[in-house]
Image 1 (cartoon, rainbow, N blue to C red):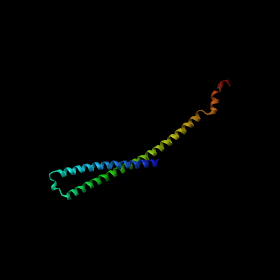
Image 2: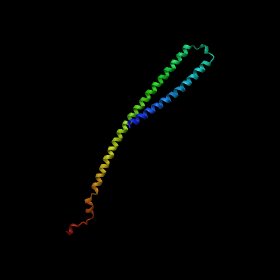
Image 3: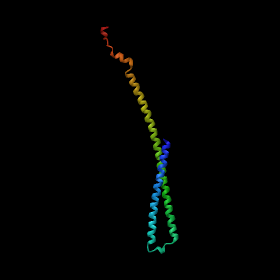
Image 4: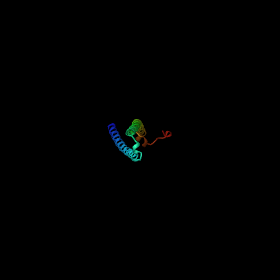
Length: 132
């Protein structure tokens, strides 16, 4: 069960990584469009290479902070899911033991109600004490 969970978890992380890369590409595409629109404006001559490099660094820093926050949130989610799994396993164990006890009590009660010796006693006629 744990191996299956680990494989599923790895698959989920790979899927999230693919989604993140797709979103990053979309964000980069949007940033590229923003930069192109800024460059197409009439004040292109006023923009220096240094300011564009600085803008790029700021964008990269913002992206790395966003990724770090996303990773932190995902790790917290995984930890919460592991805790929930452990709690559910414990609850399942308690419920299984309760069911086992209940079945044993029921079986004992059934055995006490109708034992083979009692069946023959039930069919015998009862003699009244006055006639003895």
